[in-house]
Length: 271
Image (cartoon, rainbow, N blue to C red; front, side, top):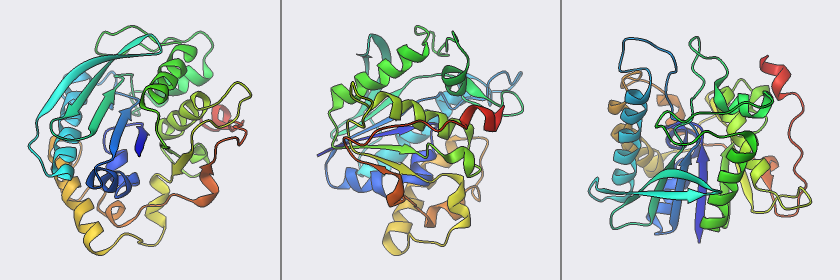
């Protein structure tokens, strides 16, 4: 079995999808994680917390987190791969079935940039997203084609995303935009869901009861502890409440053959 999780930023998987992805790793499944933004803070001047330097710090964090998850040395092999005609950076964790994919597309991070390139790809006609690592720019069709290329290459039995209605739930704009873009890519010629896709609740989990406890909560916390010291925007208390929560609602499970209809209120809800 192979799973493919699409994440907006480095840490969304660790906070909102774990312990599910970690369980795939422990079971020895082929486990792919694709980050659809650089996780950067665009346009912040005079600090390593801004552009590609900050993105690389966070990527160091997720590499450390997945090495901790797998219980192996933090030793990754770099490989450029091409999906849908686009060259993309990937890392494979040595001795495991874990691979990470990075697009380096600008994230939304207010007040420097309240919208981000994923939202613009969906809502600004003709917009092109320029990855901050210098690789070729994406149009909407190009970005969706790249995602479809990943899905075709990986051939997963399950695709994970954030919530495509997260904008109605106080979620991050990138979480929602990433989920919609993946859902757009994960369709057949008739617009029906191609691969089983599960959506996960983002920020809203903090308002829900704890549902991850015992050894699983301890392991989720251990993995988070490997990540957060790499991110200068965080401290040891950041996001602690999310570590005991994980919500993947049955009502947000899209089975193969189910028509995909994007939410019509996403653009207007944040404009």
